Length: 363
Image 1 (cartoon, rainbow, N blue to C red):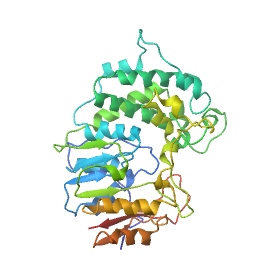
Image 2 (image 1 turned 90 degrees about the vertical axis):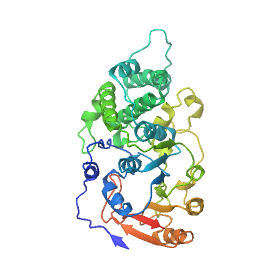
Image 3 (image 1 turned 60 degrees about the horizontal axis):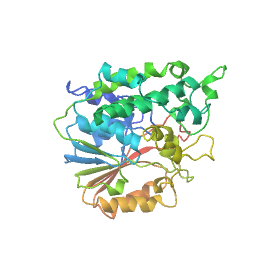
Image 4 (image 1 turned 180 degrees about the horizontal axis):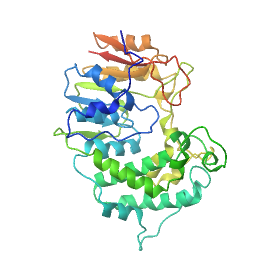
C-alpha cells in the first residue's frame, strides 16, 4: 500500500509541458474533477502495459484528455449526454474548430426563425436573470443549425462552461439566483464572473476549446452509455464512479447538472421536468452508483464485465463500499491488487478532512 506525500505540490499542467504538440487541458469547474490529481494518476499508470483504454465514467474528460495526450487510444464514456458532447469536442475531435463566423451564427438571431422562450418562461428567478434566460433560449436553438457534429459539440462545451461559471457553487442543485443578485458582503464565489455577460464567457470558452483540440495520431472515441454496456475490449479500464459517503449520501450528477442536460435536448425538455421541486430537475430513476443499497452490486458487476482488462478504480477511502470491500471485490477477478493513497487532497466543497483519494489497481 503506497501513500503519496501530502505536502507535495500539485502541478497538473506539467504533464503536458514535455511535448509542444499537445495543448494544455481546458479548465474545469465540475464536481469531483480529477484535474489536480492527473500527475499522480499518470505516475500510477505509466508503468502498466496498455494501449487501449476505457474511461468508463468520463465526467469532465480530464483523464481521457491526459490519456489522449499520452498517445493512448482512449474511449470516453458517460451516461449524461452533455458530458458526452464535451468529450466529442475534446477527445474524439482531432481537427475541427469554431471560427468567428461560426460563433456569430450561434450568438445572433436568425431573421426567419421563430424562437421559443422555454427557459425564460420556465426558469424565471431560478438560476439566471431574465435577460440571461432569453440569451440561453436563443443559443440553445441556434447550436443545432451548425452542420458539423464536432462544431456543435464545441459550441455546447462553451455554452456549458459559460453556465457553470455563472452559478454559485458551479451547480444547479437548488434555486438560488438571489445569492448572485443580493447586495450583500460575500466571503465566497466570484461575483465578477457571475456578472460577466454570457457572450463574453462564451467567446472565451470557444477560444479555450479551440486551443485544446489536437490530433494525437491515435483514434479516440466518445460514447454515451451505462458503463457496463460499453462494447469492445480494452487493455485498461479506468473506473471513477459517483462517490457514496459512509453516511450513505450519494453524488447525483444528474441533479447537479440537470440544466445542462436539458439544454442539449431543448425540444423535449418540457416533458422531462420534475415540477414538484423548486429547482426543476429532470425526472429519472436514481442511479445505482448513488444508492448505498445497490452500489456494491454495481461494482461487482462492472468488475466482472471488464475482468480481462487492467482495472483501475478511483474512489475515496471512507466511502461505500469501503476500501477493504472494494479491494476484496477486485481480488475476485484480479490476482494482483494494489491500493495507493494520495494523501491530504480535499475537494472544494467537502467538509470531510479524513477522507483520502485512492486508486485500486487490479492486474
